[in-house]
Image (cartoon, rainbow, N blue to C red; front, top):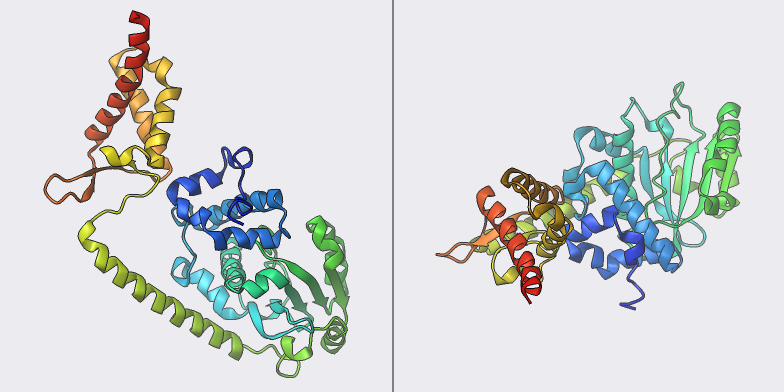
Length: 367
């Protein structure tokens, strides 16, 4: 299983955001649970899983920034707008299951009270969907998506409900869109042609009153109680309880992490794979290997050039490493703790690497 879960072959990941994530935290992208999530979503098609991992990481970087690329997204990573959308209940998880025991993801455009930036909508929906994927059952069996637009809405209230994050590793066993307006029904009936090809056969668009749409959904094994616990009104009580539980869960996890951090406080900075380490510890570190490869790529330009040109090449290597989140770290002489090297020391480290690589070639010329 270990070899089969290697979802990002070198040819596919080369030059992509996957390599950046790998450099920042190799353990994150190598984690078995992380990879299995994509294998399940692709029905164990390794190449499709590899491509989806890359798309997922690109989406995550776009929504949350590169510094959070290899971190689990929590409520603390959402801004006030994101949380407002999340608390509104526009996107929520039903407490009921469909007839096959699958989870149900609900979207209620009628609960939108104001306009939201597209990024806020996407970040909040990302959070809801990824919280569903914490369950292996949802990963394996898939979920049912219900967009319930059969409740009274304000004019243009459907406008900001685009973006269902198809690049997330989730299996949509069925997608149902319900509308009580003929214009919306016709529009979405055409729009489904833009869905990923594999999802089109699983998508149904329903037109009618609230009661008629609930009846049509029940014929697909989705009970009325899963959509509207109360008569013809969306309920927020279950969603509010879910939100509170998520807050408690993440607070407990944060306290545990803080406790672990305090126990490690005496060790100072903790080196990462993407860092360039001074001394013997750097021989096998990814950051040192990256620096060496950059030096090799610039070796011809570095030879027989001016001092100013050499300095520019050195600076470009430092820039490339820091862009990928890398630091130049050395151990203090007194406590043997890791600390950041100065810019001058980083330049010397690179110049030293240039000299070490050039020496063997000079020896060969003499012989």
